[in-house]
Length: 53
Image (cartoon, rainbow, N blue to C red; front, side, top):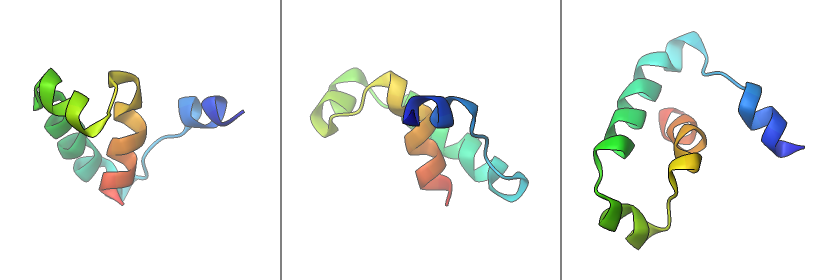
């Protein structure tokens, strides 16, 4: 069930810019860096939302 809530959740308007910056930061990281900290590309939206808060 949490997948559906993650799938349909959206950042609030005031967090929108911070969300975009966090998502760009995650996408700019190398695959080796992401593997070191255990982040998969499917987790990017959830982690970016957490970073934006």
